[in-house]
Image 1 (tube, rainbow, N blue to C red):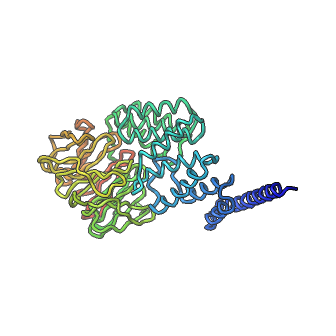
Image 2: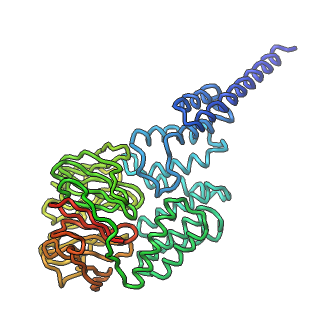
Image 3: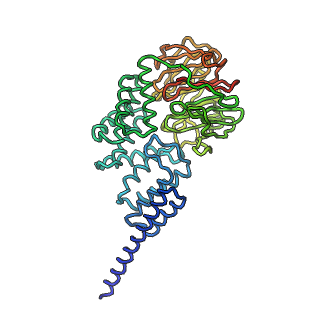
Length: 482
């Protein structure tokens, strides 16, 4: 046999043996991963080492990234620490760069885009958008192409492009009627209708999404809560019947709702932020030097504001610097949205700054001209806050314009919260009264904090289901409606 032929046969045999070894190793690695073994990651790395460009290399790299706990949908971000995000991104990048024709490349591209939206230093919503556009434009009917279309619509929604987002969600429902992406799109249309004040339409879309049976447990629970808010808002009803009344900690000074019924409780004087579940049990705690406010978004992002900056509260109980106060000056409070943007007030409440994900410090976006703001809240369309100097509620819009929403009937307002339907609750009269208003400032009723067994509340919040929450510093009480 000619020497060149012998060499070819030899090379082919080596490649075949290499592939066979990788296949056997992959079976071992998958079994270890299924068992939750600590050795699964090393076993998957061995698959790639045996056959770096073989047919199982992309599978092993992606499975290795999945061990980190990758979010499946953009709403599920915020649950990974920054080092884990970087680790997963490196693995996904190897697939996209070295194995672009592999059968897992579409999934890798989709998941890379989701990780690019994590609110850390590597945040890049434009690169995420381009990755999703490429998947959507490929014209395939794959799970990942439809997921990318959902991601693009979600990005438009977060940017306030509600018409564009609604159109994209509607097309997804038509094109993939029985998919999980379609069910999520239906719920998303409900969210937009709720923000726009279309309460009956919102309730109908939420119910459609629930009836599909395609929502995961967490999103189904959120959707039921939002459906109930839409119904209550349509009927101009605010429930204030007591559901829970417990001691929540040592001299709590602030509260932020988590999901439908949980809470983040700020204990400034002891340097703690604690998370409570619906029954009042502590599920997480973070040590924070002089926390001024805690921020939570519906989908899991958690932050703490201090005079010196904003900290991201990690799921493992650690903290990471999200941004410093920088040239903006000392901070007093803030609010975050689902994209990970954080608006902060300066110490005097006279200036508002915006921290874009990945930015190192706030950029000034508004100054008050006589207003003095406290406890800002984001209603999906605008920021609203108490103006303690003028005894009113002020709305600040994305173009930096502002307008009073409530100008009468407030006695020494101290704190404010907004429910998912845009209804406003203002704590005033030295912390003894909560007055409710619709998004346009129309009065909806009042609630005395005596009904919560308190003398003077110091802060309030609304859960995802519209449930009112109150805390009292002196007694340490946390009270929740419904």
